[in-house]
Image 1: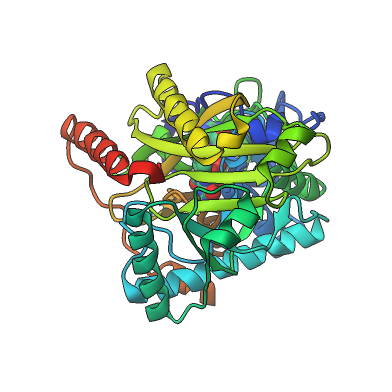
Image 2: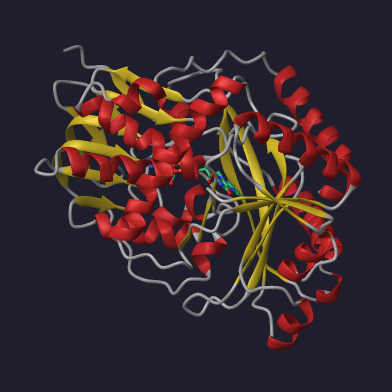
Length: 449
Ligand SMILES: Cc1cc2nc3c(=O)[nH]c(=O)nc-3n(C[C@H](O)[C@H](O)[C@H](O)COP(=O)(O)OP(=O)(O)OC[C@H]3O[C@@H](n4cnc5c(N)ncnc54)[C@H](O)[C@@H]3O)c2cc1C
């Protein structure tokens, strides 16, 4: 076989701490790869996608050697820094109402539910409790007339899909969240809320007796052959098969050029609330809200989990950074917006500071399609999760393992019914246009932000 070498152009950089991981008790992680090893299967990337691929491979070819490489600590990447909503229903971030086309939506719901069932299997097998994996459903909520109009059109879309929901009145929203801000809520039951870093850690721990995991071991180079050779800073892996589970960084491996949008979104987490502040806030101890307007603010309140304390997390703002790096001015702007959103929703918590602020990568495509398939002989890409990686990453990981081992399956034939990510407009028009459009949509979102 022709020995082509792929040099990895860029390694991931994640701005700020992965706060969900930071608030957990620190435990020893996995070793760095410091020698030469062999594997039947090498998974590069240990987020939702990589861990799902590892688990599906362990189910299908458990007697073969499976190795997983993470560029940093697994729970410090985007998988450990997201808002933790595993959503079964269509959730197109670049649509006005999260909705897509009808047939596509029905197919997506089926696939998303298969992925959530797979994740639920992990939660059960690896003994995750309800603070880590809570099948409590999700609430989309609005605080303005505009937001209510978004909920109304989302509701019509759910009617058309035959999906049940329950409406929540302002009084119900207040007794649930403690905040007067929300004027309408729409609850659906199929979503799961996770503590994302705890989920990643516990999933990795559960898999670690079947999969050899190495952290702080980025893949730097792949030389293709009958057995591929993958170099890391201090070691190398000779692997028959490779699954690339690196989301947007698939482009750093040279694949899907000019087809992927690298979007950063940002979040802040309060310090632990005091007993007096918890009392002043009111409401229940754990809840999460998705914004009615896709450009609005996601909020989560969570109660103490193994010493984390009770805290609130606020997420909003999005920027397109085709360099796959966010800068300090992006972070500063996000911090300003989040402080305002927090003050709008929680005036009773005036003076509560944000202890952690961070940003994280999403990878989208223009037509919301994944970057999936065999990109070179026995090298599969399971990337581009279009902003919903908890679910779509889990699905892509399962599907990559099934495609590589089985060639076909019922779920795979449904999943493969998609197009390739569309070519993007050229720079600088793309970045200027996309960032201007996002700023405009944020402005239009008004107090939903
Ligand atoms: C603030 C925020 C909130 C979000 N909220 C949600 C939400 O509520 N629900 C939801 O579904 N999604 C959410 N997301 C998106 C979600 O986090 C991502 O879609 C998801 O993490 C993608 O999963 P993944 O496993 O495909 O990729 P990642 O989680 O990005 O994992 C890929 C891993 O590959 C590693 N890697 C990259 N290059 C290399 C290399 N050369 N060698 C080795 N390893 C490498 C990276 O270090 C990374 O750990 C949010 C994201 C952010 C930032």
